[in-house]
Length: 183
Image (cartoon, rainbow, N blue to C red):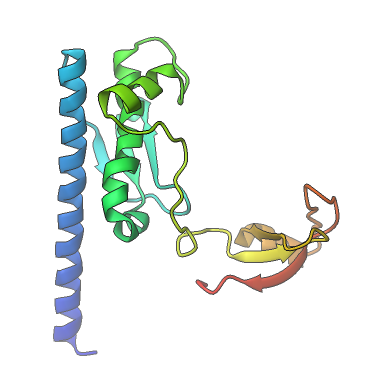
C-alpha cells in the first residue's frame, strides 16, 4: 500500500472516530437533559472514553464521573449501543449523584431511572457478539456433552505448563480444543 493510500485511510478512520464520538456525546447529553428535567436539578457531565476492551460494552465509574465504552462493540452495534448501552451506563452516574446515600449498582434507583426517566428496559447485560473482542480465545472441552469453555491467554499458558483446570459441572479436567479464529 502506498503512503498516500495509508494516509487517506488513516484520515478516514479519524473522521469516523470523531463522528462516533460526537454521536456518543450527543446521546449522553440527551440522557442528562431528560434526567435534569425529571429531577429538576443539574448533573455534572461525565468524561467519556472509548477505550474499553474485551467483552464489556460499558462501565460507569461513579467516583470519577467517567463513562468507559467499548469502541469495537459500538461500531458493530451502533444504533442499539447508542440507545441501550449508553442508556444503561448513564443511570449509574445519575443515581449516584441524585440518591446521595450508598446504593446498589442495579438497585431500585437505577431501575427507576432506566424505566421511568429514560423509558428503557432495565436489563443488566447485553447480547452483542463479543467473539472479535473476547480476551478468552482458547477453547477447552470437558466430559459434558457439547460444552466449550473459553480460557484467557494467561490460563491457557498455565495449562500448558501443567496447571489443571476443572469443569465446574462435571469436575473433570479441561482439554485444549482450539484457538478461536480471531487470534
